Length: 144
Image 1 (tube, rainbow, N blue to C red):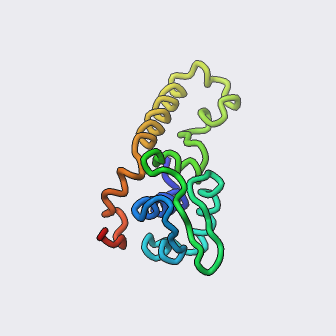
Image 2 (image 1 turned 45 degrees about the horizontal axis):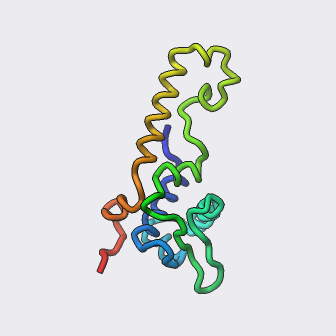
């Protein structure tokens, strides 16, 4: 599995919003600039994150995005799956009815275990924890 560009951009956006703090309105222009995300792509990603109730989009000249989820509870898994859907590693996990051997196949069981471990790992990391070290986004300004 490889994270899509949309997933990566969504993580950058939410990390930046968590860095700024929940409930803080941040302009789309600032996020796009600080996180190196094309503005049109950011708009599309933000719509998906809003559908997942992770952020709120405020319209207008003084609009922007507001993190509505608690960074202590919001995980990498939440954001990734809000953008790409539920993680799976191969088709027999996503659509087991299309594989006649799924129920008994030893490889199917390994794929399932690997998927579960990946989801567990991503689900164990909160954006509060990640936002304490903003070094993964080079344009973040230091906190005052």
